[in-house]
Length: 455
Image (cartoon, rainbow, N blue to C red; front, side, top):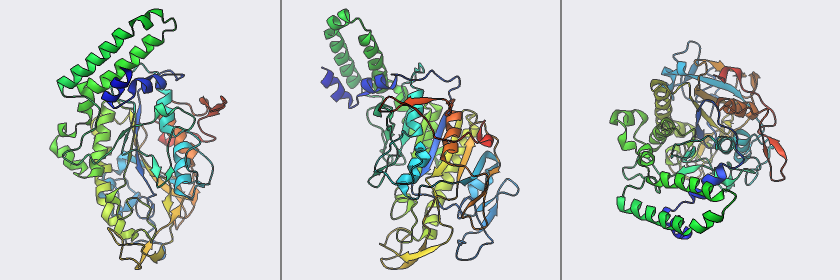
């Protein structure tokens, strides 16, 4: 009967929910939330948020610099919609770390692992899993999972760049895959709409409970009651219409869907907003795939993409989706509770490189054609912060004339993570989690919340 129930539901939610509540922290006073928009592969800071119009042609891209709504803050012409709402976000232009490879850079940014070497999988848990783990014992009545990945951050090629580490895999994300802009998009195994299916599932649960009566009668540890509690939560996820409604983008006004963009990235971020408004507290959304160009990510080496063609190709949907999300967060009164962060694992080399293309495709010339690119650059890059009750309309830190190194207010992954944890009510300097050997392990090795990004 247990096997039948699990097979019918296609989820092992009772077990996952039970595991998520074990050894967890107390509920924070304020139910804050974070949406992380992840640019897998690394976005060029010079061609977007940290333009350097006065440098030589070896460094400067072809894009014009434009003014933003904030006097003195300039962006490139690729992101005009974000320039118009620059008063609603703050740019951190002084991020820096030592992870030069995609796995190492991602692990530094997402988990605080200081190792500069690429590893096949995480040793430390990512901040999303940690936050989910620490917030598990909140007495939530919301049927939705508390950590959802809308196109989740999981892998970079064969490397795993995010994961639970020594925290149980039960705290990993509920993954939403596929293209939300497609008319047939649907999240499986939630909010069963067929009354006959709901009835059959309820009958199976009732039968199993009747067979467990004797076991419950002799149970002295309370485990059966606990199992019933999580089984009820799993049933709610499967049968409560609220779960299906939260993922149903057709319930959005057509003008709102148009504002985000009727493309994958726009609808991903619209879904993220719907979920956070429905009470989900940890959401990630990776902007990659066909809208990036031939290699489906932001890794704009010359062998992969003609970087400037790739940026022209992808930045329209990116600008539209991100600006709509930020505007929506403020328009709907979510800006104190919800923090929006836009980042990748690093930036791109300020000096332009030229290499033969390794293959034709979107934003890449025919094989062998020499084209421009930018390579990995962890020494200096930018990320964007909005909402979260922070003071917006500013710029934190600065890079040198060429954008190669940080010259003001250097911030590392520890500061990045401590700021996110602070918004979620987690004191990263004091909270520890036991590792596989039972040793209390701090959430980050070093770092403090960035004052301007603390609401």
